Image (cartoon, rainbow, N blue to C red; front, side, top):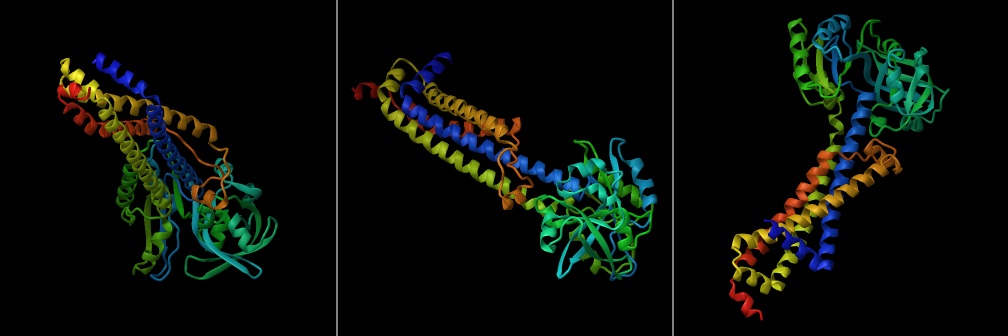
Length: 432
């Protein structure tokens, strides 16, 4: 085995120009694959951060209430009782926050825009406020009555600034329309597509007044749990516990709150129904971003592997023809066919492993250097949920890229190796 390794290493250095070209091709394919995987992971992280900051907890217990079948309000009518059921079922490490949600329109002068509306408790969510992107004003000012924070796209459409007065129009629990004059105290920064989907932020108190909720009611109980928590299993436990307590709970579905409103509104029932969802459910309408990047990464990887395999196949095939005398001589000296196959496969393995490892390492270092430093144009920033290029290299992804490219190199060397092994010892004499 050591002799085969020495011969393989010598052959890689004999034709340096061809070897260097193959090294560059293989390392480039590995580097591009690592870069795409880092971008996909970074976008997924930024999206998750934005979703869990603005519209969802790790786990959510929400309510849908109908006074009569043709109305629907996003409220938990018996919030204290629901809390009493779910809190004992959750790990002590999960933190609770009460929020409100719904849809509303905001008007200012001749301009009007409609968007998703969220509310929060300013005093209890100081940490969350610090994570929200802010362009102007102060989110702490939402603690004052009749105030609102608008996303930058909403503010631009309404042509309002901090300090201006706008009017929020929303539907109350019983189906009547309500309006409330509010002061714009903050303009939040762009948060990807959530800047469009969650453009209105108020306090829980303002939302209760606007929607006609009782003082102890909330739209949704959101639980923030540590990394690694099995949210699906925990959500199943909450559904079972709520049903045992006498609540009617919707079946599990991978849909966001807004996607459930229209189907529930068409159903002929009245009363209270609860829903348990994860942050992935609530962000399902954004899955096209990460799914698209994952598909693009797979496509780029396949193209890179194809280039590596074709290049290495052609190079080794030429090498077999050029080394006919050498192969025949080795066979005449007693080298078995399987050893000849092993020699060429080993050459492909060494070249693929060394080049892919070098490319992956270089790409990882470059991603770490460029992370958070490359500004993005507004359309791409909205798509990636970040103002700068979100690159997040992970060791498992780097190892996967190296293994995939190396495997492609090994597979590409099998047919040339088999051709080399098929040469007889007489080839050495015939090539003289």
